[in-house]
Structure formats: C-alpha cells, structure tokens
Length: 301
Image (cartoon, rainbow, N blue to C red; front, top):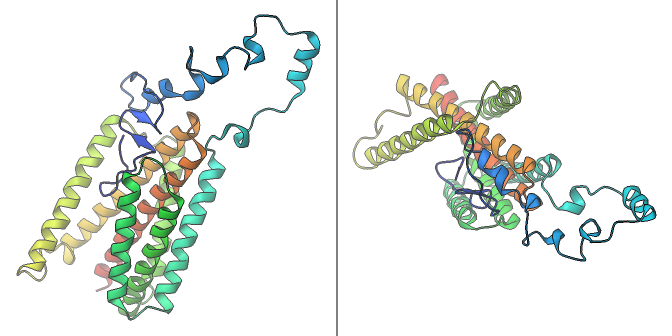
C-alpha cells in the first residue's frame, strides 16, 4: 500500500512492496500486508544479519557458554523499545499529540490574530500543502516538515473556522465533536475487527477517493469559468450526499492509518516512522473536520 490519502503519498512508511525501506517478502493468502512479515529486518538470516557475525554474538560462538556466562546473560535486562529503536504505540500517541497540538496552536493564532485576513489563510494553506508534498517525496520522515505543516494548516483552519462560526454559530464546535466521534467509532470498529483492511477493501476505497477528487476538480473548474455554483456539490441535497461521501472517505483513510500503525509496530519499524503515522492521522482528521464543516453549513443554511 503506497498511501492512505489520494492527495499525499506517505513515502517512507509504506513504499511499494517494501515496509519502511526494509526487505520484501512474498504475499501470502491474498493479504497485501502479509508480505511485510517477510521483510522484518530483525528476522534476517545469513551473512547479512549483523548479529550473526563471528565474535559479535556470544550465542554464535563455537565454544559452548559456561554456566556462569548463561546466568549472567539471563540476569541482564531485556531489550526494550529504547534499546531496539523500534516504533511503539506510545511513540505514535506522543507524536500525534505533538502534531495535533501544533495544529491547535495554529488554529488559536488564526482565529484570534488573523481572523479577518482571508488572504493570509489561503497563503498558509498553500504553504501547508507544499510542506506536505515535500514530506511525501522524502524517503524518511522530517519532524520539522510535519510540524511546519501542522502550524500552517492550523492557521488556515483557524481563519476558516472563525468565518464559519460567524455565519453559522457553533459550527466549528459541532465539527470538532463530529470528528472525534468518527475517530472513536472507526478505532472501535477496527479494534473489534468489524472493519478489516483487505486488498479488495483498499482498492474499492481508493477508487471512490479518486472519483471524489476528480469531481472536486471538475466542480472547481465549472465554478471558476462561468457556473457560480459549479456542479452543485456545495449546496442542496447533492451537496449533503457529497459531504457524507467525503466523511466516509475520511473514515476510510483512518482505517488505513490504523492498519499502517499496527503493521509498523508488529514488524519492527524504526521509531522515527511514528512521525509518519502522526502525519497520516492528522491528514485524515483534518479531512473529516473540513467535510463536517461543509455539511453543517449546508444543513443550517
């Protein structure tokens, strides 16, 4: 799986047939994620495994260990995440908290300091888009780029949310609560295995997402060159259906994020890959929030 989002390709977290840049493994049983188990760098065999070189691992020495050596080995502390450098759920939670916290800081700045400067808001959105694109083409996660994206995206959301709040009082709060509800619902459904991320599930979801993005582009072109309302995707019954579809796609992206995180932890991804997990979750949550804002505006208009 190359991406959880049709806009940004999260290179580095899942790159083609390789997991986080590690080796590839044959697919098994039709599960697109089963290939990653063959790419676990900690399960390498042969001369390429760093801990199988002569003299580096006491368990690979020709002479058997003495009882005292065995006792010392078992008495030593076990290797934890800090020693192995592998990604853990705590790493993902912490990085996601940092990224979303930065978005909130940007929202506060945009709401209270730049509320009437729409041009600055769109400029911030453009900068956020560029930073996200740069990160998507980097082979390794860059915390500076991800945090930079979060602050500029937050400024844009702050100005936009204030404008929505002035037109439809309380709409941003409703959208935030709705986003939290969608996240909680998808997490529960995923953990309970009500939703299973399979190859077929992914293909169908991405096909719908591509069609959704294409419709957005066509609607924008129609709105820019003559038809003020475009294809009518921003108002009326068609607008409501389109917003619901967008929210559903945001939930779909979340399920792919959860699968990526689960595989990263299971197969020993490097700890810095948790920044990409946080980046992906932030993209999905921002997507859902924006679609909920549009839906609330249409329903209350």
